[in-house]
Amino acid sequence: MSTSVGTYASTYTQTATHLSDAILGTFSAVLASLGLGDSYLARNWAVIEDGLTTWIEEGSLADVRLEIGSRSDPQAVFDVPIAYRTTGEGNGEFVTSQARIARAMAKFESVPAGSEYRVVVSHRGQHAAVSGWTSTSAADTSRLTSYRLGSIAGGPDASAAMTYLSRRP
Amino acid sequence: MSVRHRSIAGAPQRPAGAAAAQVSEMVTETLTPASAVDDTQVASELDAALPAIRSLIAAKQLADDPIVLVADPLRLEIRVVSGPKALGMDEQLGKVVGAARATDWSLHVPAGAILASLVTRALAKLEHVTIDPAPTHKPHAAALADTPVLDLEALRLVGGDG
Image 1 (cartoon, rainbow over the protein chains, first blue to last red):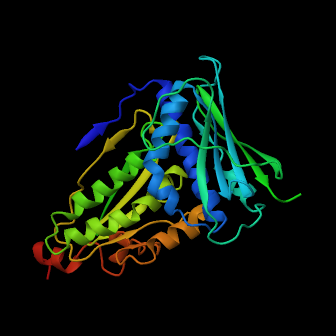
Image 2: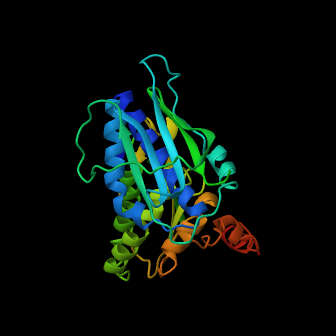
């Protein structure tokens, strides 16, 4: 069967798909780098993908976090804030920065084997309800030191960068 | 061995989950005509491998290094393209012909440098889906390197020479 991929989707949808993919790919790589299993991510992938895509497309997603360890005293947190552009402001390209993240991984502090982790989001303003997500509070990062790792992906309407919060002083 | 290539559009056209499903569907449909191949086992192993394939797609690891299905006499190389190239590209999805006579199959998934531990763990217990590289394909011409391209003796006979 021959199929030509259409370009009917708006750039909002495409940007949302592009950033969601880049975020999930980056989280997968972070987990692999830390030697943690991906069963949580694999089990919840569709729910996370659906939530990120929906909320980026409507412009309500403020940030996504991969929290490792307990909520009260996490081992590490990977924070991905989303920056939205006014239409026409962006350069119209879909880019990712896998190489930058790959280089940064060499500097991640190790975490105990089998550490639990979860994906947490925060919103700005009203947002659509997405099945599978529940209310929670974010982990306490007051004792962690943050390191900006830079952009992980960008599209015409939004971009995503990553900050690494570690126990390393 | 017949070598076929397919490219599937990933993000921003299609999320990793949907692109991984297309890869799985393509492999399943390609192997279906092979009566000697156990369809149930194909489905079971692809199911188990799907999360790793999805992560590889999201991490953009399948654009250059393809997943390779070896089902002699067919070798199928599947890439997942992302970024601007994924928009408006021509795709040939679904079944690829050529595997009907296959008696065995293997799916070679590149571990991807940044996901190696995750992919290795995910595929460790599978019999047919592996991180081992696919056997190097030898083009037909190279395989016949020791054989003259023209049978000069036959030509002489046809021409009545001798």
